[in-house]
Length: 208
Image (tube, rainbow, N blue to C red; front, side, top):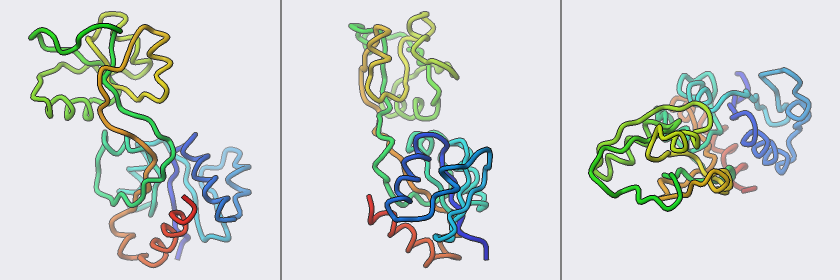
């Protein structure tokens, strides 16, 4: 049987997860000297690590080619999917926020507001919850530009410290949802490899 396979979101969440493995005294030499390899092994933990973009982590776990994944709650909220979310890993903390030009009253007037965002699904659900009609403009790069260029009335984006907003004359109007890294599990793997997965998740939780 192949090792348990876990997909990690490249970058900060990957580094923080490797930090957890190190706390468990796993042999992380391949993870720390990965070069261009995309599938890495943690031999003493019977673990294979796949490095991927956030949205792909969900795809790999959903399709069962990876048993587990580490991904931000932002990606889970935007893409959804059929998997189990088992643990809040407590790192990668930030917030979804509604923000716009400093001093503006976002909710005044009756016109339909335009919101720029990389997260149309999260944005749509947030405003549906308020019973508001909005127009969404999807932006791939710096969302902060949209209100400055008068393309949108506001943005929904991930805010960590808020310094980028401040430097561009923007402010948070309202927080939408807290975000942190989560561990997700494939629905079939939970049944087929129950003991292995449960013991691995327990080990991870023991060092959180």
